[in-house]
Length: 358
Ligand code: KG4
Ligand code: ZN
Image (cartoon, rainbow, N blue to C red; front, side, top):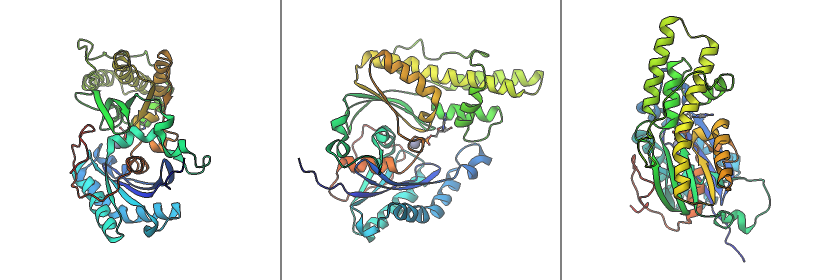
């Protein structure tokens, strides 16, 4: 079967605090450049929207230029431009969208609006450019994927279970009612003096700590649905840290133990509800995406769960694809094979189950 040559797509993501641009061809990543603003936001202990907007404005052109250069592609060779439409911070989204609109107009390329969460979801399908030859499987991951799949999206802004029967066919079946898992880890990290963002640091400290040193509650057990909550854990942690600090400043071992115990509690919330989700919705694969998906302990727990259901766990092939990045956005556009340019506006609260019709 002869397939059309997939388009080389320039993708842009400015949904939060990373300015990212990538060139994607089918599921292959030709380049994926990320300019992180984490250092800028450290002093605020979280992302400050106007600071993010300004940094995106400064970074967007050099980031796009670097993505094109690393891919060895010129603007006129592109088959389209993809950009995150939402969800995300409104002022941050605006920068990427206006840039993409102008770029697409200047070079007469179709423009593809992409849902950021769908990007995290499909990120497991991305492949490095160099791997293997061009085959049908690579161009059409729907062939290699055993549908339906359950995707666990765990990031700084989202924690949800999505049931997918095919690319583009999604049902959000469970989510957090308050903080996202990454947000809870970041807030906890701040309490114990780890700075921002703290998720990866909490993971490092946890590896040297005792996860049973402190007990945290398991919320939402009185509900039989798939909803999660992390704000109670945060409150319990605040109380515990205050009590410990009243006695004496925290020792390094206490911080390690707190990290291990808190991280365990956050992941226990996810696995507890995921077990029910998998029992209620038989799937053939388990996927994971989002910044927290880089966590080795979480992956090990999900792998164990997947094993119990006799299904594979698929994770993005590099940690760079877990956090916010433009390659995952280009991949969604590539898969959708949109033919015509559309006009659209930013949608900070874009839902995964709302079609992209504007
Ligand atoms: O996907 P992402 O880059 O941004 C959002 O879309 O939110 O996720 C960022 C989140 C932050 O909360 C960060 O602390 C967390 O992912 N994170 C981690 C790890 N690396 C990043 N959490 C746990 N373990 C990690 N290794
Ligand atoms: Zn994200």
